Length: 258
Image 1: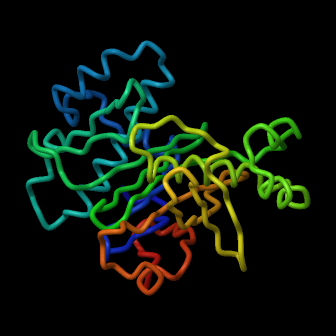
Image 2 (image 1 turned 180 degrees about the vertical axis):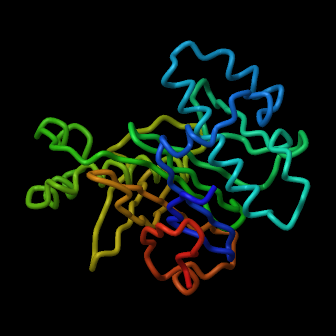
């Protein structure tokens, strides 16, 4: 698991975000799913009929499980990845963030996944301190109708002269929704992205919460978006401890917050 881009690695609170190309993950993936998937995960896998969605499901879970094994490398109990389960969840018939379990019991960690044609982005966080969501966006031209339909008036005014940032704004909305949603539908115009002195944030008017946004280029015209929201019940000083913005680390091992 050496060919990794570590986008964010922080111990207080526990946050880890990694990106990997699909080619790298395909080469690593064991030929037999039963070697690393639990029985329940294999049952979910058997329900896929679309080959591309099936592969994305597998690659995302392979990346996440190896991230968890790396974070707990001092413990030999994680050598068997079948003890880690990443199960889909639904609320009001809508998909929510996956449930992370160990030995059949729920853990207190939240996970987030995103896919592009070329890669997989995965994040793990301690929800007692931070809510976190990730999104991969492929930067491409957008039409006026797209901006008018899905972006607020303030966002449209900003993007009028920075149209190149439109897909990054969209990814910030998606990642923020993943970070703070509790089963409600995604309403893009309920999330407003702002940029001030190169600091990005996204405000959700329905929950009256804001996310900090980190944007990192992970390939040609592909950006990784990481949204983190400070939990109200936490005493963690977000600005003091994670004041530096994330940037891409191609060594696969060096933490970003140093």
